[in-house]
Image 1 (cartoon, rainbow, N blue to C red):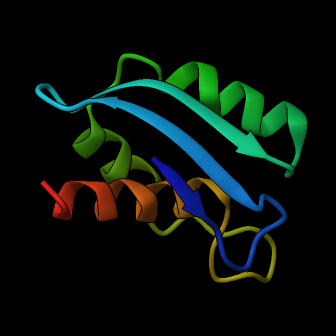
Image 2: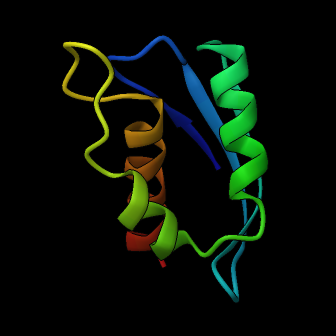
Length: 83
């Protein structure tokens, strides 16, 4: 799935999830802080969607009310609600 972000430097997140198990296979951020988004992408592979949402939802960046990790959690919630 491709998720268009809002309120962050990253413009979209491309997420591949195993439908049956809800395990994240890959995450690619477009734009954003390359070191942070690249590191986050590597850490998430193999994790369950629900675990990632629990850990990342509500994360902020500076004075922003959201962040790239929070936007990822929002994308995963959208994916989960469509199942």
